[in-house]
Image (tube, rainbow, N blue to C red):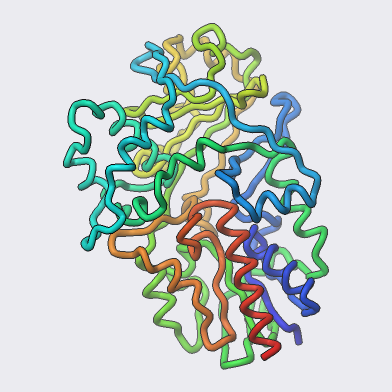
Length: 419
C-alpha cells in the first residue's frame, strides 16, 4: 500500500508527487490520458522554429514556484517585449502602454465592496466616464480573454482583491524550450510512479485510508489521496466519492470553468512586419479572436489567435475554428483572405472545451465565490487533499497556481502522516 495516491499528472499532480517522494513517502500517480502535462501541451513543428504551445504559454509575474523549477532545470526564459496595436477592420493604430491603460480601469474597483457583483455590472457603470472609454473596452477584452470568462458571471470582487490583474502580463515571459520541458523535469526528478491511461472512477475512503477504483477495474490503496483533476470533474461528479463530500461539491459549484480558443498559425513569412513595427500584441476587442500575438522579441514565423469566454464557446461550436481564424486574421491586418491562406505553412489548435477530461481551459471565481478556492483547498479528515489551479485564489488559472497548490497539498499530507 502506498502512502499517497495522486489523481492527475498535470503540474499540480506531478509537483505533489515529487514533494511527497522527497519527503520520504511513496506516491502513485494515476493519469487518465496517455501523456503527462494536463493543460500544458507543447508540440514541435520544425517550420515554427520555436515550441508550439497548445495549452499554457506564459509565465506571469514573479511566479516564485515556477521560477525555482526553471532555475533548477536550467530552462531559459525570454521576456515578452514589443508594442501593442489595435485593429479596426484592418486599420492598425499604436496603443502605447496598453497594460497600464487597462490598469486605470481595474484600479477603480473596490476590493472592500460588501456585496459582490458581476464584472459586467462594474463596466456598465462606465467607471472613468468618457475619458476611459477605450480603456474600458480593453479591460473588457482582457477579462474575457485572460480569464476565459463570461463577464456576466465572473466576480468583480475576485478581480479587485487580486489588485491590478495586468501586472502579471507586464512581467510575462516564455520558456524557450516550452512548458513541456518543465513538466518533463518534474517527472524526471521524482521517484514516484506515474501510470498513464488509468482513469479513476470511484474513491472509497475513511479517515486514514483510501481505496481507488479505476476504469480498467484496477484497485489502488493508500493512506491519503491528492486530487488534482480539472474543475468540471468535481462539479459534475465524474469521480464518485464514497462517502460524498458536500463541502467540496459546494465550493466547486461556486467556481466557473473558463473557455478559450487558441489557434497557432505557422507562416512562410512575417508579413505583419510590413504593417506594424515590433508588433507584440494586436488587439481587436470587438472581434471573436480579440487578440493576436507574435513571439516578440523572437522573430519567429508564427502568430497566435486567442478568443476567450462566450466568443470562444461560439467558435468551438461552429465546428471550423481554422476557417474562422484565417478569416479573422485577414480582417485584423486588412489583407485578402487568399493572401493569408497562401502564407500558411501549418495550423495548430486543441479543443480543450470539447475534451471530456477538461471541458474547458481554466477556472475563475463566480459571483459570491471568493472564498471557494480556499474552501476547496481544505483537507478532508486529514485524508483527502485537493490541488490544482482552481484551489488557488491568488494565482488561479495559471501553472504557477497549480504548482503552488500541489506543493501545499503535499506538505499538508506529509504533516498528517507524521502526526
